[in-house]
Length: 264
Ligand SMILES: [Zn+2]
Ligand SMILES: [Zn+2]
Image (cartoon, rainbow, N blue to C red; front, side):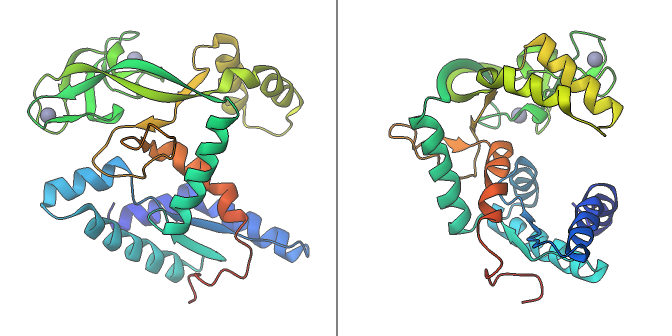
């Protein structure tokens, strides 16, 4: 989360977006190029914890640093915002409600890893343990050695990344998105896709064939985040990953008249 990391991220993953925005502008298309700082993510909460300051202070510091950095690098964002804005909260909650009311979300109770020392549920990547596939030490979301997508419960010999103690688990109820209801459409879409990188093609085929990741959790526990908007789920927060995905089309819908741009 230092400036160096910010620049690296910019070069590795953000430049293609800027190229596209510039290309389509040159072509004469109407372009609205938007992005923003994730102010609800686990790294923010953990860093705040480590420094003994509020998550808001960390979010403010890094948002400013990112925005300055992008400006100096000459990024052409029409809007660079942040996920703790009221607009973002409202739009994500609205989309969550629509998914819920149209039956695309369902509840499921799972056992989630809990640290008795830190007195909190642990996000996936804050659980470490041995990968059930290759046996190497892995994070709770992904094994870097064999690329297997993991659930923290799959790991053996688990430890909490914050305090190093072995965590326990407690049952919790979450909302999940029924991605499997779109299996046919996704298969058709990926069959027709052209110009994808080979690893994207293979990974998509694998997921569709396995059918083992049909449902993505769309709520998560955390110390900080955005309350989801269902009638009986006020204590939940939207999973930051889902929240960001939710917000892309919403930001796009804001229109180019939205004043909060980097240049302002
Ligand atoms: Zn592995
Ligand atoms: Zn702990």
